[in-house]
Image 1 (cartoon, rainbow, N blue to C red):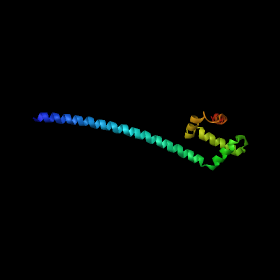
Image 2: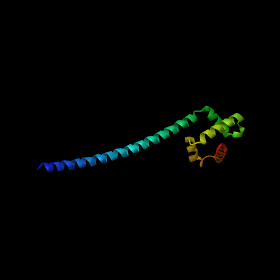
Image 3: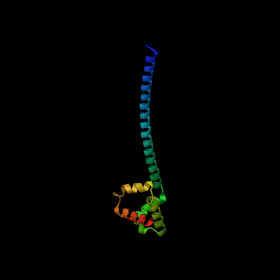
Image 4: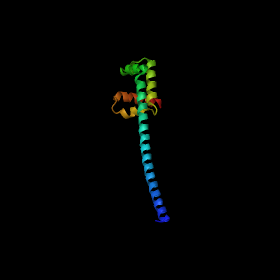
Length: 124
């Protein structure tokens, strides 16, 4: 074998190594993309859980919600104002609560949906 043949074999092996490296890089990028998507999904789920847990543990809001379930008109004026303000704040903007409400209003009590829609319409 002469040096030209050895150089050609070396160049061929180098080209093959480049293709293998590019293939490996493509797999790593694909894996990283999937991992980032999973991480974002997990973060959203954790944020929703945190918000839901905070609302569930808010005794003032729970008390108002339970009392409002009997009829908002039966709440004293100050508590009704607070309940309606919190409802507008929770569902009036692009929040996780609004996303949940929009996704679930087809299965919620129609009277409650009409009430919330009325509150949101007066907020605009």
